[in-house]
Length: 172
Image (tube, rainbow, N blue to C red):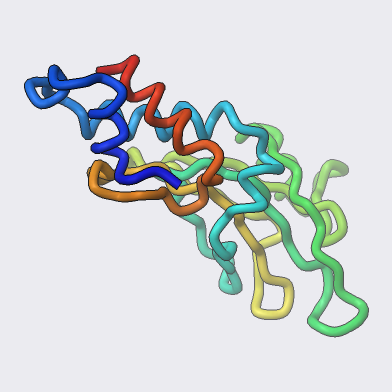
């Protein structure tokens, strides 16, 4: 575990660090860069609890790296299983959500797409999630505020924190 991100960066760069500007932005960019470079399976291991969807609503994905999207195929109990959703482009998603199409997705072959409405990227399931057939989204939250005084970052493995500091030093 590192001291704080700020102190570790200062130790790596030296005294010139105190006269630099944009350290917080460089650190946030470094966290994003390292998270994007790590395997999804590793980020899943450290992911926060998944967001749960039971009402068919869209999921705002702004400042999030999507790790896994699943949907339950049956009502709760022994019979239901979570199925991984397949990512589709908007045109293919339209075909998959058309009940008169031969490409219609089912509860056993769920799909999702990213839909941009008014500048907000949203994830949409098909078939829509319900209270019995809920959707789950595992994600990594990208930083949106300064992390300089933090000693770790939620969802990021401890073993990657020094890599974040090195990348921040390069960006500074």
